[in-house]
Image (cartoon, rainbow, N blue to C red; front, top):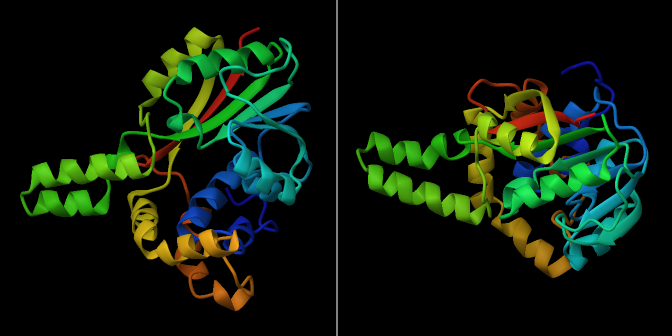
Length: 265
């Protein structure tokens, strides 16, 4: 994971995002450096476009999202040639149009994810790669407050907290690889490789960031951005605390899983 030391994804994310979002996105950006992404490329669930603008050295051909407000932000970042408001289950492109696709931390939020996988397969060329990442069962299993409640012999409270945090995170799917493999095969994909990342310690940083990051939510509502002061000194104190998680992201108990797939030929 240290083959590209010159691109500091953590610093690039900390300029614009709360620290816990920066930690996760910087970790995921590094995975794409060693992956082929032939054009034209589809981003399924591009959101505000910040991830693509930081991660890739070229504009992505199409960014797709069902919500208008994030697309307006994505236009400002300039990471796409074309932004399109549409549902992932109804992609307005002909069969076999795209040579690659990715979906970064999106599919877990979609109730009918199977329909989206079928539609992505339809618009991909045979053999085209499709990359995505999603949380797995370790996401709730290793939440620090839930584990603290268990140590206090309060299992009901631990499970209630897990359900609450999952709801706050808007997760519909935190499934293991075998579940995703079945979905992918049904949609016409071949699962080539997967790996867990984001250790329990990194997850704790993300978990507590939801609480410590509440002031950033206020600035987002008031000023339209998470970080008002983009000066390096504003984030220099947190950088050393996060860097190790980004540089060594893989973990057997990682809370997220990255999938490398391709449409069957």
